[in-house]
Image 1 (spheres, rainbow, N blue to C red):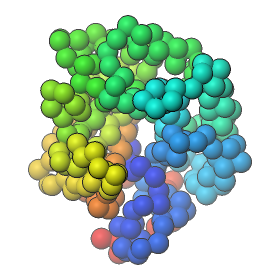
Image 2 (cartoon, rainbow, N blue to C red; image 1 turned 45 degrees about the vertical axis):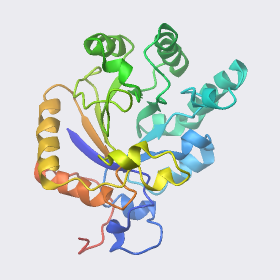
Image 3 (cartoon, rainbow, N blue to C red; image 1 turned 90 degrees about the vertical axis):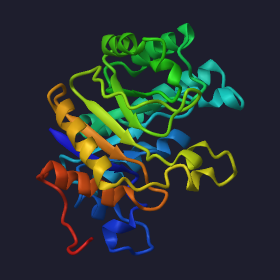
Image 4 (tube, helix red, strand yellow; image 1 turned 180 degrees about the vertical axis):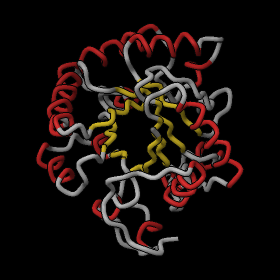
Length: 281
């Protein structure tokens, strides 16, 4: 099975004929069977908020939720929280996703680590802690440090994730020897292969100015690149029960058009979507 979605549902004008307003979740579900929610990285939503989401989607729609920033040690770069606070985040997060788990609407929890989360013994141990604290919840791991793929260690890292029953997130992003990670289409947990496409805007990705958020994912994949991704998705489909592709290249509103173009290349249809507007592109 192949599913495709976008990061957030509200920032994709291509889904509403280019209108400048926010896209409603009820509109988004007419096009895709899954969405990635990133707001949980900044603050853990309430159970009531989650139930409001559920009331707006078909019963077979699924959510990917990004782990909170203290769960991925992003806070270490500023003011690290104490361990009681960190562990409380895991408990609160687990309670928050309970309605999704009960309805089988939680595809996975995305642990997107910062670039300074390098391949160290302590960080291998943190992955074990994550598995323990998350219990049997689905977990997907996205590395941002190239150290996880250097020195011939890639297969060992994938095997380690497999032992923890964690999904290896396959990313497309700008990278070099000191930053970013390469495209590594390897499956750790055969239940799910998760791909996240950030674009290839090298200058924007490395930009450190105050408006970096508006530059780093400013990229539209061309037809040749999408054809390559379609081929990779088909290969991964032979190794995993589901291949889920998330487009995050949306600084210029390109994620939705690219996602729908990939869907066409793969010649796939999803059943049970919400009602859809006509004449979109």
